[in-house]
Length: 352
Image 1 (tube, rainbow, N blue to C red):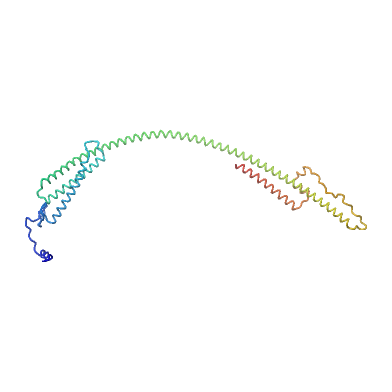
Image 2: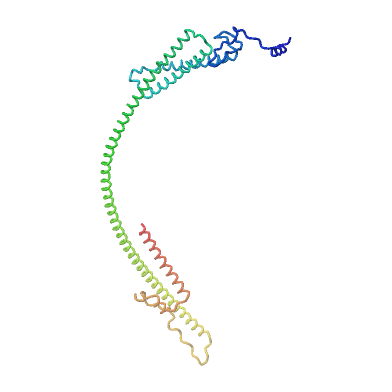
């Protein structure tokens, strides 16, 4: 018969009664009925599938707690001897307290897990398991005593730290008072030095101001002297330029007069020759020859003649318009050039 048909017939048939020696041996809790399902195996008891899974979960749980307990127990065993005060430091004691607390919690978890497993699946506890539980309880009791001592030690350290901090605060206050007194002393000395420095600075400023005033006065006097020399030099240059212009005007006037007289002599000679070449009228006598055919020699003029102004010279002699304009332009240009050169020289000396 195929297996599918067998399973179908098994489901349709009424369940067979389980013999008492094959029933699940799980220990019921308060108010719980015994499990009516068939049990399998015999370690630690005959259990059904559901309670077998529960047994496995509780077993693995307290085994995990046991491993954590062993790890923390190694840390506890590695702790120093707390009877020696040299090991009493705040950090070490805090670390030991934290380790002991974790160790005690792990022991409680392992004891609780083992008790839950025993009360559910083990009706009669063997001696080995009982000794293991007693050893765990002893470790817990010992750890609780050590934890209490460590907490007292921590309180003592905290009190000592508080007293030390108070002492340090008092010392700090005294040191700050001393430092404030020393600072006040040095501040007074510094203020006195600053006052003396300010006085010296004021005196130095007054001295510099007085020297600046004197320097400005000397500079003003020097500028006045330079301006006076410049004005005198300008006046001298103007006088020399005017004398030179007058001298040149006199020379030009003399040359002009000499040229005019020469032209007049030439004109007279030409007129005489032309008169000789023309036939004279019958009743007119020929003109006499010129008595003075030579160029007149101008006499040397006195010094007052050359010192005359340009207005007097120009008024005494006729001048052509082009000659007067050329002379005026040349003289004015010469005067402007000399005055500009002297002004530039004075400016360079004043700036330097």
